[in-house]
Length: 325
Ligand code: PGA
Image (cartoon, rainbow, N blue to C red; front, side, top):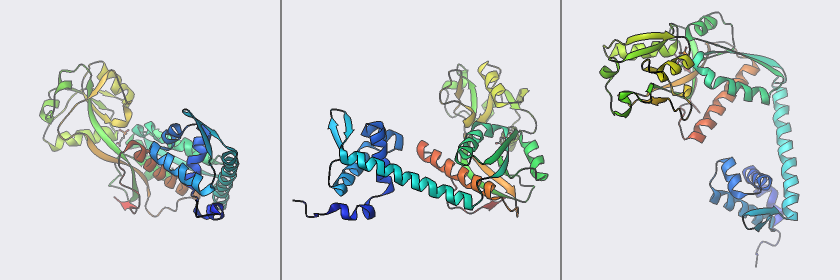
């Protein structure tokens, strides 16, 4: 016999938002396993949390019919309660945002070219959350982003390497791996531990002068006393990929520029690669960020942290203080 004769009495204090989230997802998707997928949880975790929830309610929330689940009357009542709770929490979030001035405002971001593979998505999500805030994104190569930073033209700047020559705050927020790429049928594609000396015997494709990718690539080979045989300079990552795929030579690009599966390209197993770096959000030291810009900075950090958690990668930010470079 159930010793707790009035389980519902403590429901409000014992239930967690996470349990309600899991319940709402299972109810909406009609399946425990789909809820587990969407929330990036294991199915046993979902089952266990839903069992705890039903125990707290003291009544079943779902009827199981084969693989399908259906809400019981208690489940339907909890479902509408969930919606009210989430609506209230969303409302609270908006109230706070309004208090902080996020109903309006502007955020101007300038980012190096390679950041176009992730920055627009983060900005898009931010705009969605704060429709009243006007956001602009200028994408150009490192040299031009540096010029904009010197002229204090934007609120925030995204770099693959914070400028050492300027007095800035630089917040690392996402991993950035640079890899050596070749056409899939390149003779080196099957080799392991390819020495850097072997790479410089191949024709090489470089980004345009002023590119951050180019300067780090040149530096790595220079530091090893090696000279690249530059066959061609190209003004964009996409152009580089096409030329590499066309067999014109090797190149070094951020892994972010490569789709998960590319039929035409392969990452070579070169010693010392991938070069592990980070993306940084940068602003002049001492600059008072606007409410909207600070909110964007916090949002970008959180978004990167979530993406890394989903992909199992690591970020090195979190509780780290702002760093000066
Ligand atoms: P880029 O910069 O897109 O100008 O090459 C990338 C980086 O700095 O890592």
